[in-house]
Length: 537
Image 1 (cartoon, rainbow, N blue to C red):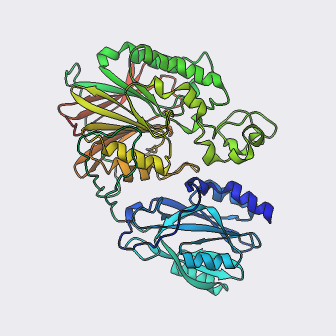
Image 2 (image 1 turned 90 degrees about the horizontal axis):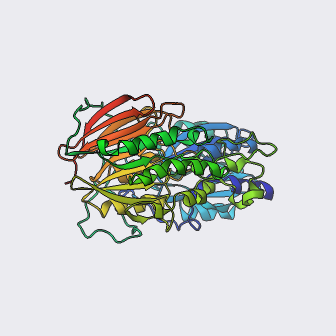
Image 3 (image 1 turned 90 degrees about the vertical axis):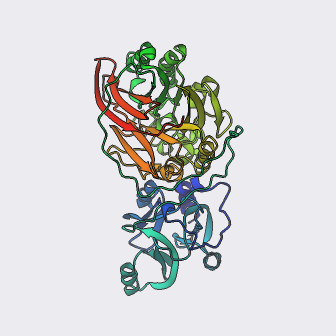
């Protein structure tokens, strides 16, 4: 059983939430519980032979649990919170090696009772939940049969289990269960301190979104040109298939086109939304080719920032060893040589996705212009830079994919401390192909794009634009929260030979934001949209 326990410890994807062990439990305040915080998915798998269950915020952990007898994948069963924000309490994950059984408990007394029965608290937090009823939660019951413990997610399931010989031990915690609509998100309070001194200007109060975001139709774009009140930014999507060979010139052709048209576009900044390479940490030549393309922007004096994508980390890429299928996008933690190359303790996808040394070496912070601060010293994964256009100030906030809680907190403080800057956020994954804000953490990230929306995008009125890639599509959406409009762009087409690049033109007087997808090779355009934002003068 010790071997099994070690295996479970190895696949405990939820360990990404732990920052030095479990936090001490606190009593949840039902009145303070925030329904809008309940965005963390909770998945369930059941072992039909023993009746025991596995809960996890990570769908890939549940899927992988079939090897250990948890063959009934129940899928998404509810939503918890990513943090204690709003009065939530950490739900501890305990394991009984004698019975190969897990239990999730939220109160100190329940945990102590379980430990007395042979359970050991694992060094991870599964999720956060309320220990008291709220307007948007449903009680989740704890039931036992012999030495086994599991949860019932509804009164009907409780009735079924008790009829099968399980004993109701009462309510374990309260979660938002599928089909329950949460209340609006409240005002978040930023607390972390960015790496550089905050602006001396007054800090704006965050505002709460009025409802779950819903995309609004694109407006008719403007055809005006050469307007002295306008400037543009460019957004380049995933380039991972463009750096595989020396003969593929798409990436370089695109940056050369942007450099050539710098003046006519009044181009002030270029964003690249991640997956710069396919598995560049294993094939250094991919970074060499990417650098050759972005060096064109540097030589032209065009500021740019590159976003970390999952393919820019050590989380992806087989290595052609026995048992693998050659280079590809599979999780490298599954590669039979991972332990030899990186050490067994590092062969976890949630660890490898934050291992970005090769990305850092190729794109050091020193290569960026007008850097204001970073989350981690010397790492470009989370960084903010500034530029000025037509007497308006802009801040580009580049965030890691599915960011860690600390990164989100840091981002809140950066945005809050620059109330006179119009903020552009870029992160690898934000919109899905249908223009919805994704609720997925990719299976091994920390938070979801929806969490970023709730905590940052919708909470601060100086956030104006969000750019992302990852999903193979071009689309956009507009969200208006308490009078502030945020325009989000997804731009990614890995199979397009025409080098699509989105050019966004911003009128600093009227706030009109026009987007055109340009194809530098064939000279065509598509996907024109227009929206209006409130530019901070």
